[in-house]
Length: 62
Image (cartoon, rainbow, N blue to C red):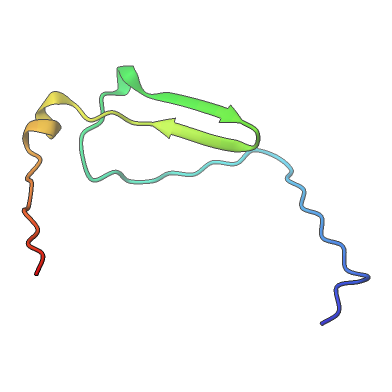
């Protein structure tokens, strides 16, 4: 397909809502969101209890 005469334009209208279930407890008082240069960054820190329940798994390389 020749792209010489190809234009693409995206537009959004209205409200966007996205719900993502999280696998752990989140400290909702420390949640941060930043929108910069078209990128949304959301920081969701775990609660102390969720951090304590984390299990580290050793990886053996051969």
